[in-house]
Image (cartoon, rainbow, N blue to C red; front, side, top):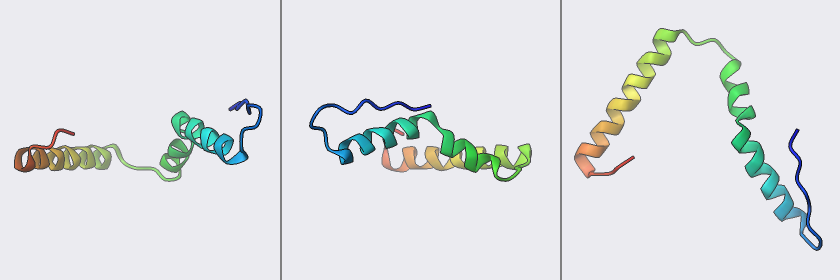
Length: 66
């Protein structure tokens, strides 16, 4: 359970923003979306290889460090 302590004279918008940040860090939503469908290990490995190649290509061409 996520607990957010609201300070005195703090707007609800700021408290909601802090709650959203904490919720995002827990990774609950990301895990839920990942579990909605089954992905074969070979497909997830292939996607990882493609992603790594893309990052390497960007790093070589533009000199960007990711």
